[in-house]
Image (cartoon, rainbow, N blue to C red; front, top):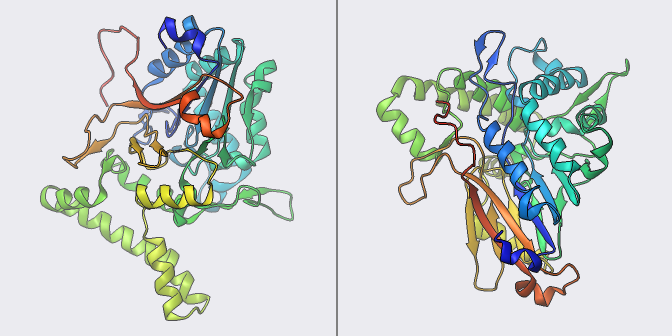
Length: 381
C-alpha cells in the first residue's frame, strides 16, 4: 500500500492458502521428499511487511485458507495403517511440523503482537486433523496471550471478513475430499479418538506419497492430463506403474464399496462419475455459488493450487489464491511461473458500507509476493 493511500484504507485482508508446511527438509538424517514448503524466509518477510511500516497501525486480517500445515505429508512416524489417523499420531505429526518451521511460527506470533492484527484459520483437507480439540489447543498455545487474536475453529468452513466477500478452502467441491468437520472424530470404548478421513486423504498417503519418493514432482504438475501424456512419452515405465496403482486403489477402495452396499448399476455409475470429478470448472462453480449467495460479490478459494483471477460481467469476482509450493504447469496457455507466491489482497476503505456500494469501498486483487530477503542465493529444490 502506497503511503498516500494509507488514510483511505480502514482494513486490509490478506488471504493465503496451500502452503503445506510439513516435517522439514531433513528427518533423522534423511532428505524428506514429502516436504513441499521451502519458503520460510519469504513467508517471514511477508508477515513482517504487513505488520510494520504503512501497515503498523491499520487493521490487518490474515486469512489462512486451508492446507497451511500438511499432516498427510509427515513421514517416519511410528504409526501405521489406521493408527496414522489417531489423535496421538496427529499430535506427534503436529509437533514435528512445528519444530521444523519455528521461524514461521515466531513470525505469526510477532504478527499477532502488533496492534489491530488477527489471524483466521480455515481448516482444509490436508490439515483436517485440526478437528481434534487437543491439536487446536497445542497449536494455539504457542501464541500465548495473543492466541485471543488467532481464530481456529471447526465451525468455520466459509469466512466472511467483510460484507460481500466469501472465503472457502474449496475441498468441499470435490467428493474425494469432503468431510464433516463437526462429526469427523470417533471415540473407541477405551477413550481413544480417531479422525475419519475422506477417501482422498487415504489416496494421498497410500498412493501419492509412495510415488513422490521416486518423483518428487508427482503432485506438482498441472494439468494432470498433460502430465500423463508427457509421462507416457518420456517416463513410460514409471507412468504405467503409477496409473495401475491409481486404478487398483480406486477400484478396491471405491468401486468395491459401492458393490458391497448393493446399489443399482445406475447409482453406481452416477457415484463413480462424481468421484472422478476433479474440481468443477471455475465458471460453473462461480455461477452456482453466486446464484445461491446473492449477497456475495467475491468468492475466494484455494485447494487446486492454480492461481486465478476472473472478473465477470455482472461484477462478481472469482479468485483462487494458488499455492506457496513449487508447481510445474505444462499448459502453454497458462502463466507458467511455478515459484509465484500468490495471495489475495483486499482493501476496505469504509467498514460500514452497503452492499450496493461494494465497488466504491472494496478493492480486490490477486498478488504475488516477491520477497524482500536479499540473500545472494536460494535453495535448490
